Length: 305
Image 1 (cartoon, one colour):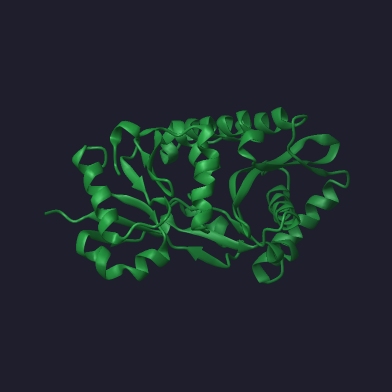
Image 2: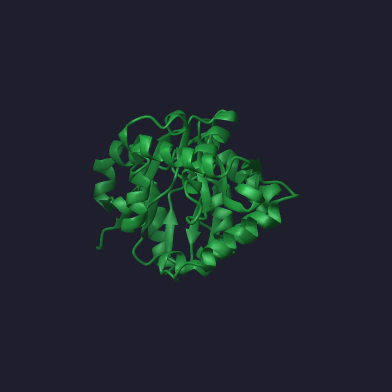
């Protein structure tokens, strides 16, 4: 099953196969998404290994860790065998498995505990929001956001928000890269440069990946924000990238509201805004939007013999 000769970089041509596998066991987690895997493949040195017709596993060469298999879920004993083989090849020295679905970890806690150490890290959790609530912005915290949206509308009566398409794609990418260049270099994702690489890969393959995006323009047409997102499953979308000009009052809040509306328009009731990565400012920003729940993915590590 684990023939390492078939371990290879993830490619755009893998999209139909991987999306079919994901559909066999839909997830709310942002990692179970082909676009995410593909965009970050260069940064994470992501490779894919087919485990059969209905299962495959993604492997990050940068962090030397396995993703939980896509498609049919393996029994805990088989998962341990796969991790042991990757460890034996020194591809994943500690047999680490990332993005383990919480229901799988809870259902098989006893069996998994025989082979693995099971852990959860708050910085790994995804923030899940209800789009209709983001749109209405009800509640004490969200009312403050609504006030900022009204300020944006007042200051920018001629604002517009359009889908990213071939005509404005270059403008959206240029804006997002400019917002990145204004940030200090960060060790997250191996630095802002790595995120810019993922962003460029997303825009280079925008149509083929089937992703969606919005470009928000303030008064006189200047860009105030842009976002890129895609479906995880029929009811939830994940936000891949979101950049706004904080100097334009209310732009970040208006962008979130418009994302919620765009997702509702395509039938998605929920928004995944991904992890806070253990960064305090990012955590506060995500909490300020009052998440409905957290996607509490687990990690596994083989027990030392």
